[in-house]
Each structure stands twice: as structure tokens, then as C-alpha cells.
Length: 249
View 1 (cartoon, helix red, strand yellow):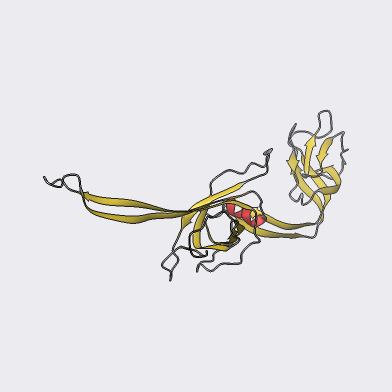
View 2 (view 1 turned 120 degrees about the vertical axis):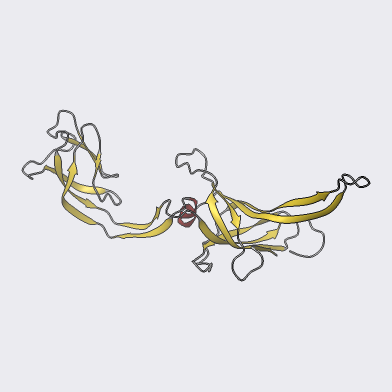
């Protein structure tokens, strides 16, 4: 920030990087639209008040201590890494070239759906047989198929009974990208950088949080009618070798 009296209205990029066991950033993610970046230093004051006759009620000594340093953020855009942070999980790469399975055993449940083990990006070329492979069942007569989710349900009046073990042949599509294994970490330690400017005078402004222990502060609604917001809050921590947890420039 530039010297002198200023009026401040900020905008800029917020980026996060997970920290390794030695508090070294493991690469910063691309900036995602962040609508709130709040830093707070909380203090409390201890006072000694006089009970003596001539100074009763006056403060004889006062000391102010820093209790806490916290950060709160709101994003109205998202990314796989941001979802992994909000779900306190890990981001795992998926690389599946697709293929086929033959004779996978699936137990039928009357009036309910059973799922094959590898739906991938959907299944196709589905053939459903009995456990001896002697009988081939008919789609939309003996069973219903949800190919997108890899689900099979026996139909009333069909030849499949509750508890029957089915043999299912199918092909499944290729799948690439990533998945999140949720709730695998009690906390997520990150470094945060804000690279921005003061809209009033176009001067540069920057924040660097050396270490913050984050947790989600709002649920994720996958069926919300509004664009999803991801909210975080956490403690700023002074890492080893430093005397402060964050910098504002």
C-alpha cells in the first residue's frame, strides 16, 4: 500500500496453496472469484483498577494481549481444489481408459435398484443373465436399466425374483479428471495470497497469509437454485522461523 492518507476499496486475485508437513506451499491454484477476504486480529485487555480511597475506580495498570488472528473467505466460483478444501478431503486423479466386464454378480432386490461396480461415465451393451448363464433377461420386461448411473431394477411380472444373483455383462466409458475423497482431514493448512489494487487510486495492495488452518463455514447445496458459494474460516498461525502470521503490503 502507498504511504499517506487513503480511501480503500479493494479488488484482486485470491489464491491458495496447501502446505506440506514443513509448511512449504505445494503450488498455488489459479485465482477463483473471491467476494470476501476478511482478516481480524482479536485482543483482550486486562486492567488493574484502584480500590484505594483517593483513586478508587481509576486504572492503575493496563495490558492488551492478542488473543487470535482469523481469516474468513467467500468464493462464488469454484474448482476441484476448492471443493477438496471445503470438504476437508483430498483430490485424487482419475484415469480410466474404459473397458468391459463379463459376468459381474449383482443381487436383485424387488422394487429397488442395484448398482454395478464400475459405472464409470455410463454403461452400455448391457446383457443380464441368471447365475447359471442359461437365461438371458429382457430389458424393459424383466428389468429396468439406468445406464448413466449403472443401475438395474427387476420389474414386477418379470422373470427376476427378489434375491436372485444376476450375471451382468457391460461396457463402460473412459473417465478422466479427478475425484474428492471427502472428510479425510480434520483440518486443511494453506498459504493464501491476495494480489490486488485500490480501486480509488489504482495503487497496488497485497496480502500474504503464511499459514492458515481452514475449515468450511457453510454447507454445500448441490441442488441450490442460486450459484454455489463456498465459505471458509480459520485461524492464522505463525509458522516456525517467523514472528508474524500474515503481511499486508
